[in-house]
Structure formats: C-alpha cells, structure tokens
Image: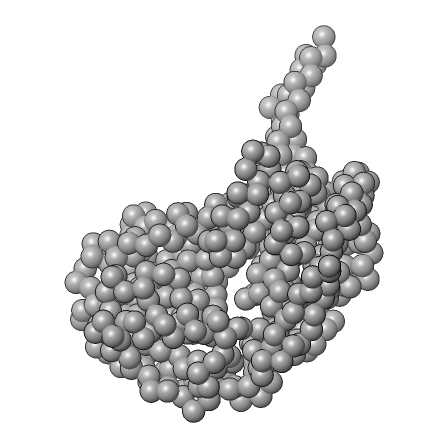
Length: 458
C-alpha cells in the first residue's frame, strides 16, 4: 500500500498538500539513475557546473513572492519577511565563488623525477535530508557545493515543507541541470533507513532532531558511509557589564523570537551581568509586547503560528513546568493565542538549569533570562548544555570576547550579533548538536574525498 505524506498548514490546520511516497523499488531506481548520471556530471568542467548552479539560483529568485506565500502556508512564517532568497543566494553564490580555490589540487612536488599531489574527488551520490524551519537555506548549504564538486544529489525534504524540494527541482531543471543529477524524492522513514543501510548513498547530510540524527547513524552503522548531522541547539547569549544594552536587547530578542523561535541557532538562554539585568528584562519585555501574533498571510503580522501544533504543545509544556517550579512569565497571553499553533511569545525569569526550558531544546518563542556576577559564571552556565551550536557575547571588548569564546563548547562564537550563518565560516557544532562541516572551504572538503598521487617519472 502506498503511503502518503501530508503537510498540515499551521494557518488553519487544513491539509495544504499531500504526496505519495516512493516504494522501495522506485526509490532504488532513483538511486540507480543518480549513480549512472554522476560520472558524466563530474566529467564536466568545474566552470560549467558552477555556471549551472548559479543559473539555478537565479531561477529560484524569479519567484520570491511565491516562495514567501508558500512558506507561510507550509510552516507559518509571515509573508512580510519575503521568503528566504537573500540567505539562499548568499550561501550558494559564496560557495560558487570559492569552489575552484577550495577544490584545487595540493601540489607537493612537480619535478622531472616525481609528481606528488592530493586531489579532491566527489563522493558520488549525496543524500540531503533537509528540515522545515529554513527549508530553502538549509537545503542549499549542501546541495550547491555538492553539485559544484561533481556529486549527484538526492533531496528529501521534511513533510512540513514538501513543496520546497519540488520548487528547487523545477528551478534546477529550468537552468539546465540534468534531471538524474538532482532529484527530489518523497520517502517514508523505513525506506530512508533501508536505502542508507544498503549503501545507496556515498554521503548523507541530515539536519533535524537529535532523534532523527541518531536514526541516520543507526541506519549507516557498519556501512562506513559518512553521515553529517546538524541537530539544533540550546544556544546561549551573554550580556557583559560593558555591553550596549539596547543593541543587546534588540539582537538577542530577535534571535530568540524570529521565525516563532524555530531556528537551529536561535537564542534559547540569556545570561545578563547583574548590573544590567533589571534593565535588560524591562526592555526585553517591552519589545516583545510590540509583536503582532496572527495569520502569516496578513502583512501586519510579525509572528506567525508555530509550524505544527505538537511543536507549540512542547513549548507550552516547558513554560508551564517552569512556572510551576517558580519561574515568572512576563508576557500576558496575546489575543491571537488559540491554545494551538498560535503561541504567545514568552520571557521567563527566576529560571534555573533544573528546568527543561533551560535544558531541553525548545525550538519556539520562549527564552529564559538569568543574572550572572561575572564571566566565569556566565561561561559555566553557557557550557552547561548537551548542545553546542552557537554562542553570542555582547560586549565592547573584542579581546574579552575572544578569550571567552576560547572557553566555550560551541561551533560558532558571535560578538554583538547572533542567529546568523556566515557562508565563509564553517557551520559546525559539538556534543548533541552533531558533527560535520558545512559551507566554507571545509564544506567542500566534507563533500569530497582526498586522493593522493605519487607518480615516479624515472
């Protein structure tokens, strides 16, 4: 019996779209076609592959209004934010710009006696499992450099954003990328695991939950297939005594609440020096009370619903548990809060690390704020987490930020900003955030394998 994937729109709980999943045999045929097409794709000059990827990005950019509207229906982001093309383009074009340098041979010796060099070769078939929260940007992080490096790509998108993979396929084909080189698929979990276990792919990139990442690694166990995982975080922000208070409030609250808090690198914990704590909380509460929760199709809405009722239920549970244990909730229920996907953004004080809201990933519009006496206390609390994706430090002292950053268990250290992915820097994490290297020069290294040449000429 064919299984069907349904995208339930958070706007009103209706079925926005549904797609049948591929059978095991049909999925195997997709992999076979991708493998057959890969060698010819890799044989094309790199400049040609780069040109085609650039053209595909431009095709996506022709429909940004449609992108914003469809994302509102699928995962609830307000149309006022215009979709994701800015970040999508920035990431893809940066990887295109650095490709020839990043993938250039390393020449050890080129003499009359020997040629010794290290080359980079594509893995072969790359499988990308993309999440719903930033469905275009997270997918392109791997899709663009994988194609540029000479791999064929099979994309499986989250059920919440089924349409995104289809739109990417349309754009890539319109740009001239061969259909078997880039394929979008709809798969259930069992078929996905079976394909990985059967060594169908040469590289797996997964962005999603810790449980999902564990399932990927279990499926790949014993196959030696490289699995790259980015599994979210519980990202902290620290406001030092010398920080620009207004900038810290604006930056950290945006990092905590944008996209209804559904950001892998969103701010979920804030530690403020005691001298600024009261003022920070007061300003943060005032700012959040200006937000407009409502239908994401309304241009006045600044915060839409969470992508799914079950996600909102988890955030509500964390808030309720914290309040029951002594935390203070500072934001009164918004009129649009329906007890379902539409959730009032919340600021909590009186929190501690025994509470789930300060320990488990919330992935929603809630943040706990704690007072700290100095850098040492802040660092200890920031590191007291099973996650390690990003950490933000607000200060006027760059040397202090650098020194603090060296002591943090995280993948990226920010100073005076947060919740941003710089494509020139490696996107990575530690602990339960997973392992891997996305974007930057290291992203190309992850999507290729080294091959050494030792050629004796005489």
